[in-house]
Image 1 (cartoon, rainbow, N blue to C red):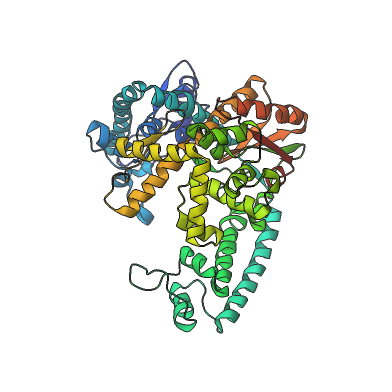
Image 2: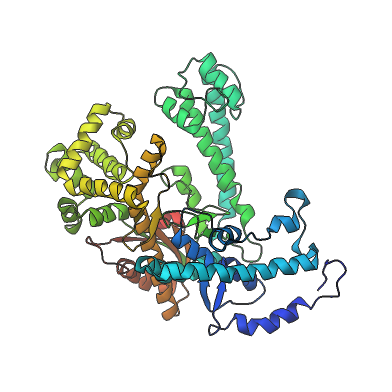
Length: 543
């Protein structure tokens, strides 16, 4: 194997070295410790080595202890061991002038490599005792984050098939729709303009058409960001058209144009990457491509999901926790009426509407149910009367009255929210049902906006975090069961409260029957967990 190290003897052949290391790397008896070992596992797998025996990962130790901080090894070394480490950029440079690691001076490359191993061990020795000392944190680390690390790796490795021809057709249709929207925007403006130029857009909206300025940019000009356009779109046609243009343009550039180019030449599949340590609440984040942000509420978004397909002789199966955050709210708040609604299997939005409007559930109309649904979900995210008024297009006083009535009927929810805010201010964090710690650095901020944002997060984080813990436990349980039964079914995607599987026809009946059992038995809450399973030739049909 050729190398570029300057002034050094010929290196040992890579294949020979890997062959010597392979038995040790593949042995489960020899425990491995590393920093972000999922990455190394992929690199080794690309060279025919199946890494086994992963016992500890400092990236995940840090994430469990301090989810709100950075988890790079350099940051961990500085924070926990008091060491300044050699950075990759100092060796290889960055940007266009960056060199490959095999071109770095051998002495410096050796130092960097040895330091990485040494520092990882030292960081591990500093972090693990702190995790083990706390039963909740130890459970999150040992029973959730470490086991799910392997499941995520396998899911990334599996990838998912896409129908590139269907995406090409959608791209063309989106292009045609975008041209029509652009022409409509020019018509409404009374002149052609570059819809992608904030300067020209501001001129048309605020100077020519005289629309009210909502907020300013840092340089002092009127802002044309999405929030501003959404506000203006309630009353004026042009901002509404511009919003549609942005949404369709984003779908085209991010998905229909890009996904076919991201198909792996060796596997013929798209392989997203899941970050296990970047979202404070414990949720996974998907990137390259991001498959968690495909809009499911629009027809165009659902059509993109239709391009995620099963191979011949298989189906796509989707398993989704139903109304999981509301169920967690009932569990945490122990509100008697909410617990009863879920225990009886009632439509919780209809039950809430009945309580708020003082009618029987049978008398609840569609508009009343919609109001109740917005309140149910809005309160989980700490929505104010102002936010509710905007979303329902109501007077603020009417929205405030709805919220007041809600809290009168569900006093346990009001008590839970108050107690959670107080606990967050006292401790600086809140916890999930399973003991995950969700840090809120702005909870004591002197800036009102930041403090209020942290208070809203304090209410939502335990619910979103518990939901994240549940889906991870479900991933572990499902993969364990698939392995025990030696089934060919594969987990291919995880999106918020949903698992997506690729299932051979011969295993379909078994998977459909077992998934709800496996997913609902991972934890016992004060309300029943419900899992909805769908099957189809593609993701949209299954969902």
